[in-house]
Amino acid sequence: MEAEKKAAMEEAKAEVAADVSLKDLSRRLDNFAKERDWEKHHSPRNLLLAMVGEVGELSELFMWKGEVQKGLPGWEEREKEHLGEELSDVLLYLIRLSDMCGVDLGDAALKKIVKNAVKYPAPSKSA
Ligand SMILES: Nc1ccn([C@H]2C[C@H](O)[C@@H](COP(=O)(O)OP(=O)(O)OP(=O)(O)O)O2)c(=O)n1
Image (cartoon, rainbow, N blue to C red; front, side):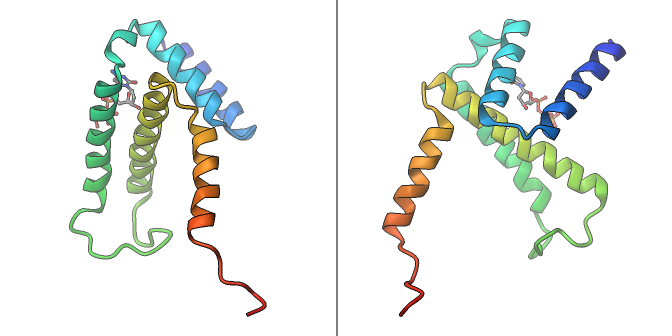
């Protein structure tokens, strides 16, 4: 079990070094669900609710702190690590939800960025 965990961590590290993509994460999540026979639990509604639950856990980290400055000065390493985990949970459920809805999230996000730029044009530099 320890060796298995270590191998998985090494594989994850190698992928991080190579810059992870949404498609890589999506493939890993698919394998994760298949290996555990959890596909039956991963309906769009269940995944949405799970993601919202994780957004709640993420919010708890900021609760009662007052304004939080960029870079999180004053936060302990342990808190930053926890933040990374909660952000990841939200991202992973979002990717899985997109997959189970048949939405290509990378493609949709790129299209949305273009749409945003048309809706909110940058001020002209020559003006
Ligand atoms: N049916 C499930 C359950 C979990 N996960 C994955 C996606 C998330 O990344 C993570 C969530 O796991 P937990 O429900 O154990 O939540 P936490 O990791 O936040 O633990 P806790 O709530 O104890 O802090 O596991 C999943 O894909 N499908």
